[in-house]
Amino acid sequence: MNNQRPAQAEPVMDISPDSRQLMVNKIMDKLKRHVPVSTPVELHELRKVAERFENKIYSTSRWQLEYIRKLSLKMLELETKSFNAAINSLPSSPAARSRESLRSR
Image 1 (spheres, rainbow, N blue to C red):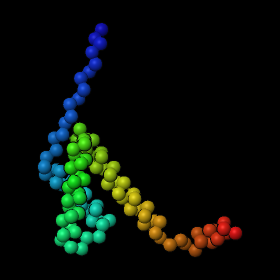
Image 2: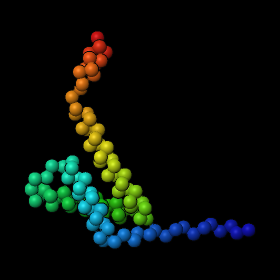
Image 3: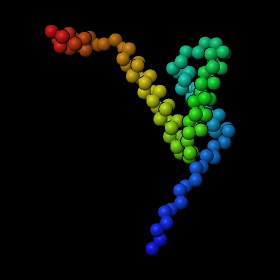
Image 4: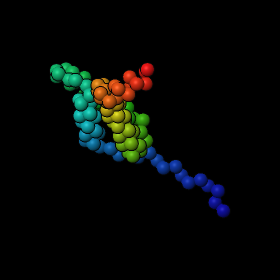
């Protein structure tokens, strides 16, 4: 009987610089939807934020799948927060205001 444990998989981060740049561009697209940018300086600052964000995810990931998963979850989180903020900023419908006034009586 062999009591040896299986060897741990070695981290594999074989992501090309071109692929990483593509991810930065996708992050930029998402950020531009949520952050108003009107000058080249602001756009440059936003790019630096996207690059730092991508690099943080890259440097803390051990595997390519982990890298993609972390990026996807963070991007989804950004979309969800933005969606919830938009919903909360909508004015109430007349029916909702009526229900609220009945509850407060």
